[in-house]
Image 1 (cartoon, one colour):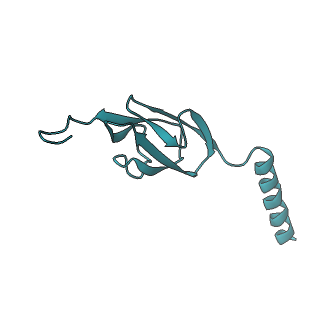
Image 2: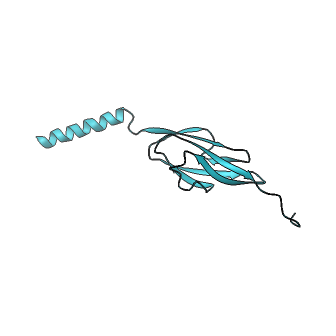
Image 3: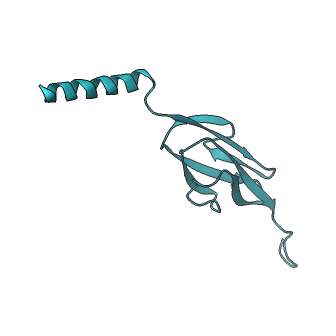
Length: 109
């Protein structure tokens, strides 16, 4: 009888979790500085389930280079890489930062 009771309690808990929405969700807000844009997943606020690994990709404009991700970067795999991931363990506000590249050196078109 104890096994049946434990099983029924477990089923009731799982059904209650599913009815309440299950996983936590978090918001990821992405922006960028002048000189480029975030192409994956884009620039806006997105909602993800807890633990989701989100691909990030930043693309610089001509005469600009990607510098780093800033903001809530504690769960970004490599904040210095323009193509990386973030694991959704909370709400994050991150920014892709771009800098202008220097003028070409003498004799370089």
